[in-house]
Image 1 (tube, rainbow, N blue to C red):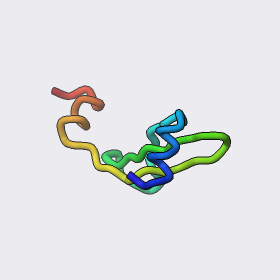
Image 2 (cartoon, rainbow, N blue to C red; image 1 turned 30 degrees about the vertical axis):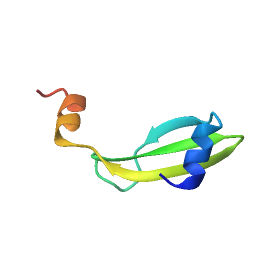
Image 3 (cartoon, rainbow, N blue to C red; image 1 turned 90 degrees about the vertical axis):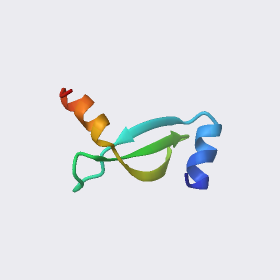
Image 4 (cartoon, helix red, strand yellow; image 1 turned 180 degrees about the vertical axis):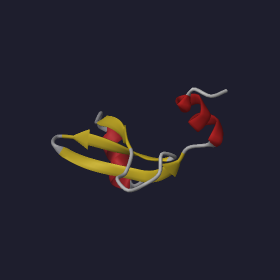
Amino acid sequence: MPRGFDNCVKKGGRVRTIKPKGKDSSVYMHVCYLNGKSYSGYIKHASAKTLAKHLGKK
């Protein structure tokens, strides 16, 4: 993860998972918030197994 994101997590920042605008449903990223500032992590792609779980399929 980016250095700023890792430092934010170590200092106790709140991590939220968001879906970037304009991307498909399998893309997400973590964002850490600390003292009114945000630090973004890398964009990640959900696996087919995870997608099926969230869509209610087995």
